[in-house]
Image (cartoon, rainbow, N blue to C red; front, side, top):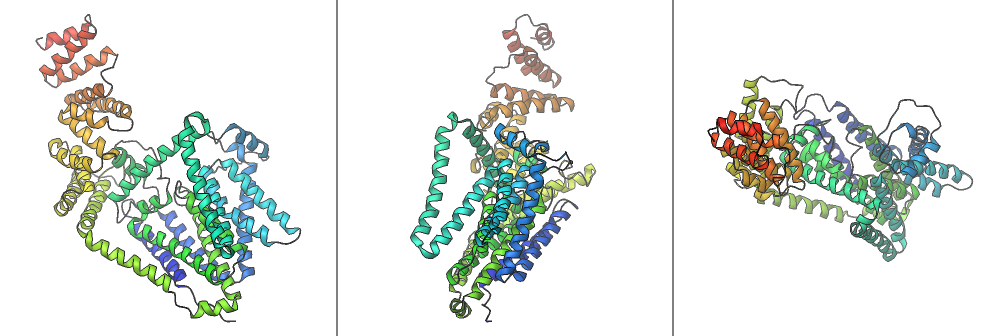
Length: 601
């Protein structure tokens, strides 16, 4: 039997997968030591699974066996999850889903718990494959696959993972459109366009009616929070553009410290697969991953043009698409639950294998694919290469500046014991590394003086070194370029605060989406500086906090406390000012009178 020539798109996809693995290896120890061993192992396992599945299942019956094995695995997992559902403690799901889950719970609590989105990410790949096996099966065997699909669907419903629901809808819509397009192109395109329009209509309708519908209120609130997280994560990825932060649990504290400008962990991952890969593996990693997926879809197009693939092919395409769409708003298959990742890569391999089987079975089309010239693939690859080269030439200054910013950001993280507690440093070593970071940022600014990232990073670093007047010009440049990025806004606002420019500080901090949170943070800062005997900075923090609260602080003791801080800092003029303001609010306040007497007022 004549074998079809291997598609260039498939070669590109496999090659990009290997580069993806290489970038993971290179990124393993960018900043953190020994945190990414599990993730690295799973990435290599996933790439191996892709290659083995694509090669070993090249016959139609073999592709069905691989798909059946995956679906049976998913069904077993879904059944176990359903029988343990009530013990999972998903407090945010609606009551009707909790009641349904209590009905499926039949086993005692075995102490095995799953993240809801992780469960959905496992099952969304397997449900379309189960549907494909259902369509491919004849006779009573269909009922078995129907039960499998039903159990997995019930599992996804009980997770209340809206991203998985959207992903499954998108994957199913694409598969139906592709099947229809094969015979009726206009109808296929119309179906796909119709799905997109329905999604847009739902989003627009939800934004208009969201205040009237409790469900939509919850969805829109979550969406706003997620978009803010994406924006901040994108800026953080730009700081570590080339190398990323490294594999494993590397996101939490850098995000808190350098994006949110707080000192406690808040988010453990970016909730976006593509941002997570960029933040972990750098530019090479995300380019390789996107290249692998884009080339894989190119191979899907190659199969559709030259053969008539069976249901398993379409099921795999739908499952992969569902996972990738879900990846727009979550990334459980990479972070916190990396063992899910091989499921996606096996799905990629099943589509490749079933597509190869379809190409082999089509004798006329097979000869065409064996002898035709892959012009489209070469044209796309050439266009991407040309765009990349031209972009590198045009933006070479900014790219060089970003490289030095990246190096400085790594040094800065290495010097921060909140971020890298496993490598304790003495004060001398810590200062040397911070000065190395400062030098890298300054090199970046020598190349591109107006670039936001090095200005912001250098400005915030100088604030940490109490060099406020030096920091402010850099932070003003960054704020002008990034007026909605929390690190730029808070960085400049805090620099103004510590420098005693209170009106400027409040003006900038009021541009935050939630100025009241900045006010609360300033109260915390005041307490911190008080513990350090930095009385002037404690007073400055409260000065700006009062302005953010529009002078509506009703605790007279706090008004007097500001005067006390100024008094301890030997700033008698401001101490008198605050004691007098306290007496205006409470003329009989004993502490304010005593303070005023001490200052000579």
